Length: 173
Ligand code: ZN
Image 1 (cartoon, rainbow, N blue to C red):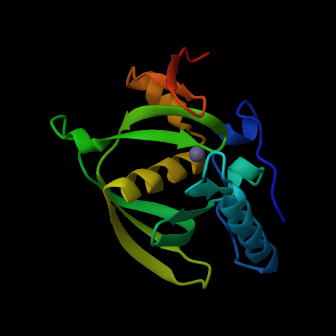
Image 2 (tube, rainbow, N blue to C red; image 1 turned 90 degrees about the horizontal axis):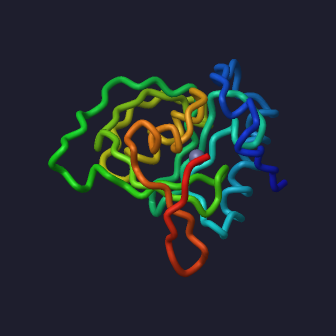
């Protein structure tokens, strides 16, 4: 089932999501629906989807980027790299399915190590580097009620609207 995205102003997107207590049929059904919703998203294409974006304030997100396919439940950040000012690659153009067609360059640590539970109820520790590290941090932000536009404001970064051909700089309101 394709799930509906909450409006960007919905307060659920600003809540701290609750821990998943048990990975039961209901959660597995939600994961299946989230996977379907993410794979159907093509304008823009999605690479990650967090449960709060579809109205469920629980600590669960999925990632589907090239060979990186993960279901991540109750993530805990174990360590994070530093943001090195000199490294250009630490700035990534980020967008979000909750705010389609808007993008902005955001600086984040280029490395993050997390512990989480997967859909098979296995506890995993994993280190992510480069762009996948940015995706993981973006999704964990969703579980903490943070959105990429918060980073845009804090970092005084520009926000662009992509109209299909060009990026146009817009004001964040
Ligand atoms: Zn997002």
